[in-house]
Length: 234
Image 1 (cartoon, helix red, strand yellow):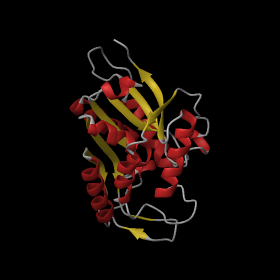
Image 2 (tube, rainbow, N blue to C red; image 1 turned 90 degrees about the vertical axis):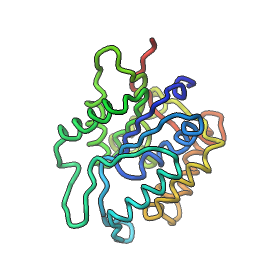
Image 3 (tube, helix red, strand yellow; image 1 turned 180 degrees about the vertical axis):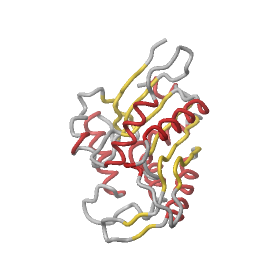
Image 4 (cartoon, one colour; image 1 turned 120 degrees about the horizontal axis):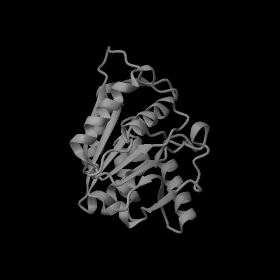
């Protein structure tokens, strides 16, 4: 869809520090290569213990990885809720109205032509962010530059709330055959998040396999899939 890359300012809402790259890393690489201004807004960044191996990853480490990934991607970024060590913050039980206001301000400041939001996967914080994004992208008065709103997938998105989001729901395939290495380079900066286990969804191998499958569906070597939520033709 050529109109996607004719949008010159993108805003990507990322629940956590690696979600935008997982879902859209190849598209981000294509966009920045074309001179498109890409801004990634991370909704929450905090230290947490992985269910896998019970390893604690500090907020400082996650932030360092985010900075490295954004430098690799060549994008601008912001963090809406930076939770420092010793502070307690649960996104899914916090105020949605506060987050919606934060997103409203971000949209007003950036004036994006394209907004990408996460599909409501089984991850409760992704569902929460999706609901806030839908509210923040409500139809507005004429003159707003926003032309397209799309939702991007999270690798394990075929379960729970997003299991009904299949390719019959306004799917758009983006050819990333020449940009998969750039996507992998971004994700390799998130060392604490990429699993080395066999058949892990959140891993470099899992990302390659999903990109290959999406490419197979669309006739490309590698692809990313997004869902059109709302578009405007002037």
